Amino acid sequence: MSTMPTPFASPSAGSSAPSSGTIGGSATSSATGSATEKFIASAEAHSAHNYHPLPIVVASAEGAWMTDVEGRRYLDMLAGYSALNFGHGNRRLIEAAKAQLDRVTLTSRAFHHDRFAEFCTRLAELCGKEMVLPMNTGAEAVETAVKTARKWGYRVKGVPDGRAKIVVAAENFHGRTTTIVSFSTDEEARADFGPYTPGFEIVPYGDLAALRAAVTDETVAVLLEPIQGEAGVLVPPAGYLAGVRALTRERGVLFMADEIQSGLGRTGRTFACEHEGVVPDVYLLGKALGGGVVPVSAVVADADVLGVFKPGEHGSTFGGNPLACAVGLEVVDMLSTGEFQQRATELGDHLHAELGLLTGAGKVTEVRGRGLWAGVDIAPSHGTGREVSEKLMERGVLVKDTHGATIRIAPPLVISKEDLDWGLDQLRAVLS
Ligand SMILES: *Cc1c(COP(=O)(O)O)cnc(C)c1O
Image 1 (cartoon, helix red, strand yellow):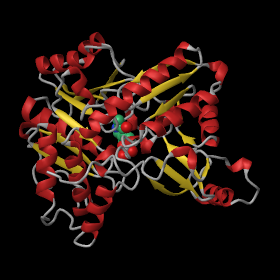
Image 2 (cartoon, protein in one colour):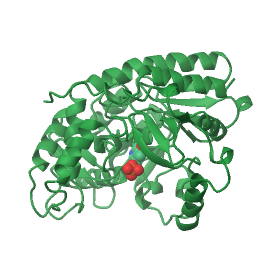
Image 3 (tube, protein in one colour):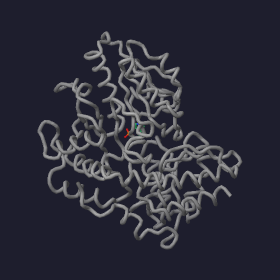
């Protein structure tokens, strides 16, 4: 266990918001031919347009703050979709990575390396499970979980070959591979990418009766986000996750919780499932597991589930590499004290209390979320999510819109209360 000083001391030190440096701005407000405009034009010309980023070009970052190529500072209230739960340049994580960079970074799984066992052991412990299968990106963890459930279905449950079904929820977001977009209900994510992988049943999120009706003897797993992040931070009705747990147990079906965005401290607990006292059979982890340094993902479950894999049946060249394990181990250590979860709870209560006032004032139609995580639906009279995001950017606050009217707020868990309040001041100003 770590003897490092509290991780919360450093990030906001020297970054008290409104006092130093230029705060915020936009490409349009600076002279033509600015560095920002040149970077963006060049990116537009030479990269696929699969994103529509806000017009800011980041050059450096620390804690909850980013600095762009013009020297302007911005409060990061998105935190890489929760990949940056521990903030930018977190000293513990950077030191762990640097130390590992000088030793060994990649072996492939053709050989053992000396960080692997400790990472898997400690992560399994954090999850209360027996085994870990490390991968790199979140989508790979989801693909791994799909393969795990199918193989478990055939080998353990006794489902006839080729018949396995996995039940998923409408409005899900589980990644971008061809199989994963096959069971997306978002036409933008799915259209033109067929033919689609069969074997998935889609039911409305939060509807236990629909889920019960969809489960058959050929169902091997239910795959859900305990809170749907991309959909706009949708929290299911109270009792839903517990109901899913009871149903899956009763029907001999794996409950696979995609905690890639909701897990690892974001909601005030290590896992969002904990809010309902639920322990799924399989955890899918990613994003914050790599500490904002490297992509690290994992599927975590007991041996009766992950034990279905034999050598040669699944793998990844980079999965579980020494650098990933060194950073991931530090992440697990940081989470095992509960400090980050506590902080997400306290700051989250404050965030939701403040956002609630905006709802009362008619500027916002709904606020959802848990912990330091909120989906805020902007009242149509106060602009679209994108417009609000752009105005916030001009005031030095970075968020991301989703589904037209919603903005997502998910600052690094290391943000100071002062900085959070300052960010909320800017939101109030934009909506005034
Ligand atoms: C981001 C995300 C993924 C996909 O992760 P990538 O690393 O982008 O592949 C999967 N599931 C959820 C819930 C996510 O938020």
